[in-house]
View 1 (cartoon, rainbow, N blue to C red):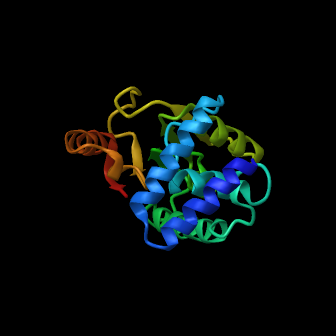
View 2 (cartoon, rainbow, N blue to C red):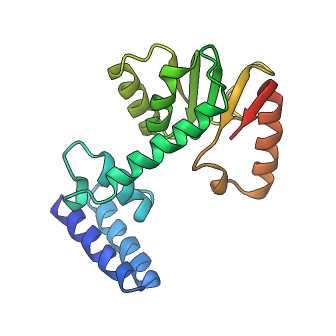
View 3 (cartoon, rainbow, N blue to C red):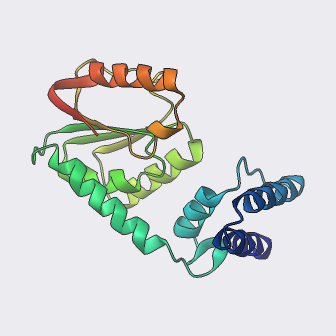
Length: 193
């Protein structure tokens, strides 16, 4: 924990000085040290720190006091409200989230819709989403491990499909295919956000 704290503080300092290349090289070197010591971290970057800084089991995560958690929660609430506006208040709406991660936005949406299905390729993220949904008593939220290509859904079966923080990760050829698949999944009058 102390080593990760040091890594976060040093990375933040380098970034604050505008030393982006140095920060990325430092984070990669530190990832190699963690890997050598049995910590399987695929990529160490600011997204890693945001995830583990805001959602760690202990307050503040790896960096101590969490400076971004409140802002992230406010952003999630704002996005959930925007997404819900597309259901037009339909309490029976069937909603699909692509790249749901740990399900924090989905858990905000689920109480206002009939069914919410979240999918993600990360087993750890899906496990966390399931645990949090269960803890929140959400019987209408299902989280599945896999991609849109792996999982099969009935055509025209969703009133709303959303993919926040996902599309920019896809290569162009996958992006086009994903949009085609989403179009096939949307019911008449459905929305993609």
